[in-house]
Length: 123
Image 1 (tube, rainbow, N blue to C red):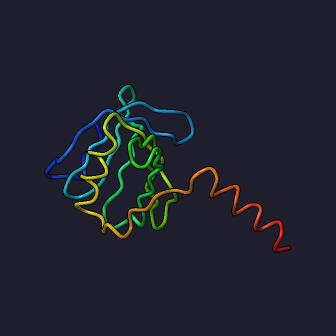
Image 2: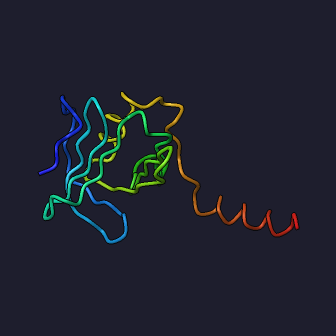
C-alpha cells in the first residue's frame, strides 16, 4: 500500500485521471499535496507536492458554469489532467495551497483557431 503525503485531508472526491489510459479513482487534497489513487490498482497513483505545482489550468465553459477538466502543470514532470464530480470544490481547495495567480483558464476553441490563423499569416 502507498503511503499518503498528507497529514490532514481537506477534500476527497471521485475523479478520473487522463494519463495514458483513463483511470478512475479518488482525488485527495491535503496539507502536503495533491494525490490521485486508482480504485482498482493501488500501485497506480499520482502524488504531487504543493512545492512542485507550477500552474493549475482549468477548462472553463459557459462563462464558468461548467468545468469539464483541469490540469496540474508541474515544474519537472509535465502536465497531469483530471476531471471530477465536483470540480469547483476541488479548485477551491487547491486555491488554498497554490497562489491564485498560478490558476489560469485554458484557451477556448476559437482562441486556438485564431492563434493558428495568425501564425499562418506571420510567416
